[in-house]
Image (cartoon, rainbow, N blue to C red; front, side):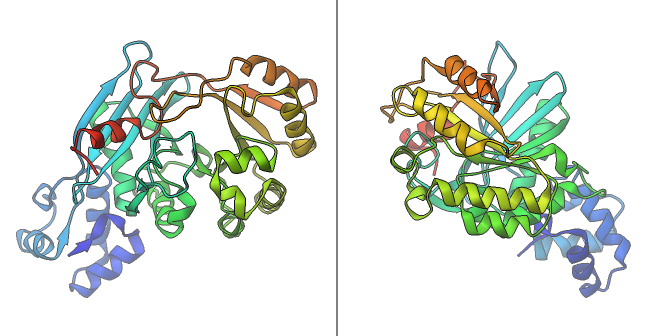
Length: 343
């Protein structure tokens, strides 16, 4: 069976030509899929015989809402979607004055092993297809009635560990025939896969690269993030500088504030020295508690920010959304797994 939704328009055109259909049929089906069509029967501008052929040869991914949580204070919506194979993933809709942002997953589970993250508990199951990533945007819009203007790939999984799938998703969501969400409205978060950062730089995409740094020194970062054992902070930052030189896009560094682990004055000073003159931005993240983790939210976030700013580094504290629900990435899926209802 063929996954049409994961095809870009050129691949879909070639597929329809193999069926003996004119190219405009591919455009029609592409547009239907990117409007959230659940079956070929909905595609009323196709002949019945073509719809029957497509039903026999192809499938349309349609995630089901397994759980939905809405924060009564800020309207944040967290979805647990059940996929075609029974796996579950999370998507979060966040409402801002400038528009609605959807945070999507790129994998079922994650193999990166970051010590403070619920997503990695249980490891990686599989990569998501481009169509399954697109579904998170489409069906979040349809279910919530809130048009999405911004996307962050910061949910379950490491996007650069699903490099080809993520790249095809970006092409799909950027298509003028589809949602047409511009690259400057998309952020991609990585724990720091250096070879993949260099590879991504070669595409010169105008998205925002967010690097999960979380510590300025190797000892602390290796404790928090196993990926650091094979790279190191200096090598990662060198790759980030190469990325900036290639794309001209300022990098955002994510920094989860953990009490007594990465929030000391000397760490703020070292971080500032690392980033001095790079034009980068530091996003300080108040830690969400994860039941299985011993880490606690820092009480020094504001002081840490002031120290960075005093040394010329732009630093902001991320607005906390979804505090009344399972806010941390992977928590809702993890809780459902414990109850024996998800993989």
